[in-house]
Each structure stands twice: as structure tokens, then as C-alpha cells.
Length: 49
Image (cartoon, rainbow, N blue to C red; front, side, top):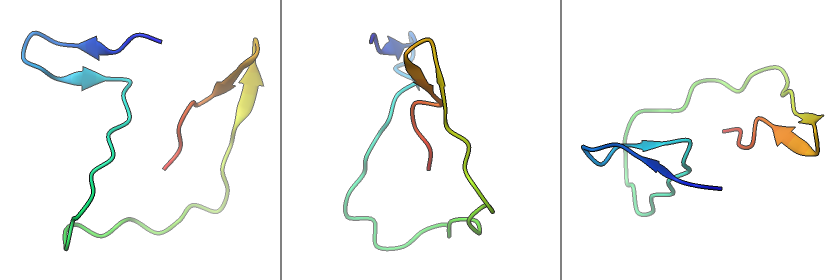
């Protein structure tokens, strides 16, 4: 898969992993369930948080 980079360096459809965060905005409550489907031999969505 290709990585889409804008002229200003922004990333689209990309996973970024950042380590060493000591504090910050809390995550929202977990949803009741998750939906992952398989369409044309591809899982959708590719990533869930």
C-alpha cells in the first residue's frame, strides 16, 4: 500500500505509533462492540483503536 503525503507533510490513511508519552488527553470510554468485516479479501476497517 502507498502512503499519501500532502505538500505540507501531512499523512493520510497512515498509522503512527508514538512512545514515551507521560500524560495527555484521556481515551474515551470503550464502545460496546467492534465491527470488522471482510470485503473482497480485505478487512475493513484496516485499523481500529
